[in-house]
Every structure is written in structure tokens, then in C-alpha cells.
Image 1 (cartoon, helix red, strand yellow):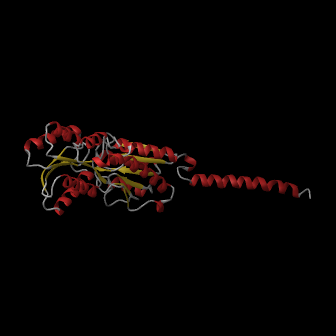
Image 2: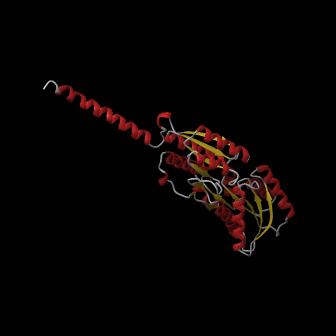
Image 3: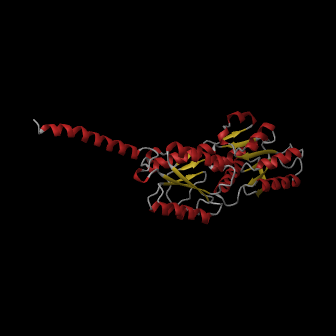
Length: 326
């Protein structure tokens, strides 16, 4: 009998140790943990963090990272495709657990993404998609072609079927500029009464958009131009100028919703905005990146996780959440 006592004493200890091990394994597999090496690390490359719209995007990324207990390394691509590729290669060298990419040029980033593919690191696109020739798990953001169509729809609704419109373009060659322009032209082609009479870039810049808007209003007197579509929120500067100059005959529709755009919607100087929530997109991308890094790819919507886009007018301002503004 005495020989059996140690065995009885050992069993509870073994069970306790096994229980601790099981708990540790469950914790290691849980969302937001990186195992023995610490928290999961997510590399995030944004093509230009100086863009005002990237403030709520970054806030959403950081909020989700804090909630999930992961580390995020946000790097600024500075609108330079070569730098953006180098940053992605840096993430590969650092062996991060997942990479989230918002590239200015979908095709230029492909070789760097292929290096991440070869290293077995999950890659997700954010706000701008990744071109063909590389693998990405999903794309989180708006459909930029549909975004352009919504802008043109707003111009049509604010004017008349045979409206003459001018377009203030984003930075030429960037994926969002190309695709939004495609959407605008697609909608206009489907509505033969509409006509695009001018296109000029403002490079996503407020000062340049103001100058382009001034030039357009000087070149096209009342009765010759019905609407100005701006692919980004920088069109608010031109809209404010038009109102001060008494050019209420020209309706402005802009892409994305800044504090200034919101104020001008209320004031009636902007007729409509294509609204998307960057804060939500940033947080969603991090959640999906954590799922991918944790082996839960099946839980991630594929091939796209399109974010909602809506045409908002002055009647819709109450729907716009504060965390989306910049």
C-alpha cells in the first residue's frame, strides 16, 4: 500500500502540468499572440502617410492592433514605388507575421510581394490593390472603379442629363487615380448626354486643386460648365473658392470626406461626396492580417473585402462617424 501512495501523489501534479501546457498552447494559438517570440508583428506599408485621409486609416490600424495585442510597424512609402518595394523587402527580411500593403502602383509592388510569397508571409492589400503576378490573401478597401462611377453619378444628380463636367484628377499613374478615372468615364459613357470637357491633375494636393479649380472657372464661364468632379477631398478648396466667387452654377462632387468637405456639405458649396470609412478599413485589415498569421485564412473574405461606398449629400451628414474624418 505504501508503494502506491507516491503514485497517487504524482497523478494530480501530472494532470496540473498537462493542463498548464494545454492552456499555453491554446493561448499561443489565440488571436493576437505570437508564440514564444512575443506578440505577432504586422508590417504595414502605406504609400504616403502624409495624405490627410491616412490619419483615420492609421488610427484604425493602431486601435485594432491594441485591441488584439499585436505589434504594427507602419512605414511611409512617400509616394515612391522604389521605396515602397524596399520597405516590403525589409518586412520580409525581418520575418514579420503578415504584411499589409497600400501601394501607389499596383503593378510596381508585385516583385516585392512575390518575395513575401516565397517567404511564406501572408500579404493583404489595403485601399489600393496589388497587381497580377503575385499572391495576396485579400484586398481591403473600396472598389475604386465603382468609386469613380459614384462620383459621376453625384454630378449627374446635382445637375442635368446633358451636363458638361470637368475632372480634377489624383496623382497621375497611381492605381486609385487610374481606376477612379476609369469609373468616371465608364459612367459618362453609359449616359450619353453627359460630356467630360476637361481633365487636369492636382496630385491629391489642396493648393494644386485650388489652382486647377480657379483655372477651370476662368476658362469656362457660366453656362459652359455644370459640374467639377474631384477624385479626392482636395476639391473642397476649389469648391470654397467657387462659392466666394459667386459661381454657384458649378456643382462640386468630391471623393472622400474630410472635415472641410463635411462643413461644405452643410453649407451647400459641395453637392456630394463619395464616402468610405478609412478608420474601419484600417482596423479590418489588421484583423484579417492576424487571422492570416494565425492560420485562419478561411475566415478572411476572399478575393476581396470591399468596403461600402456611398454617395452622401447634405441630407446624409448625420450618418458620417467622427472617427472617419480627417
